[in-house]
Image: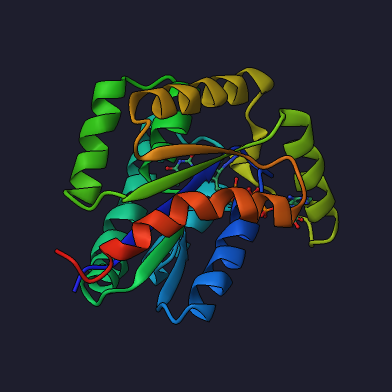
Length: 217
Ligand code: Z5A
């Protein structure tokens, strides 16, 4: 069997997590077996790494290099423990962020050497690559507004990743533009500034042509 691997990317508040769940529901209604995952995290080990990266009291001094390696330690575990077995069983795997986030955030955002970043990603993922990547785009003020609204409804949890300055997030946005330009067949940009339903409708035409791949080697 062969499954289908779809990743979601974009800036904070672009609506990835919401669209992962909506697409999962749509695909399950058609009878597909669907696995939803998130990065960093998605396994017990990965969720501990996520806590270290984002919320730990002791993460203030984390270097960019440590961040790169931890993101990819979480990923190496997720790929081998969950993604590969799910794909081998013919499932559709929807992942909220994958290695393009590392290129955008650690490569462009933290300005680590892109060749080093690429090498570390290769160790983490090997030949496990997405069939399709949906890059959700929103103007930064829309993303920030959505993120703040959601944050207001949750108990406050400090997040080290969100403490970076504006120029960091501008570089991340440029990183995503470069990724989309380099791999236009795999990476499809979707304007996600409209309603939930309108974003779903824009995503489906990219997903539907991928479905016949399931079960084929
Ligand atoms: N990171 C990294 O640096 N390197 C890596 O390799 C990886 C990750 C894998 C993960 O944070 C952080 O790790 C992230 C990148 C970095 N850091 N930053 N900064 P996370 O997992 O906690 O969060 P996130 O991935 O950045 O996403 P998010 O903030 O959770 O947002 P989202 O998933 O894009 O959006 P959402 O949760 O679906 O929606 C946000 C709110 O907007 C929510 O209340 C929704 O109901 C609402 N929403 C969503 N869509 C709409 C529409 N269309 N209209 C109106 N309202 C909407």
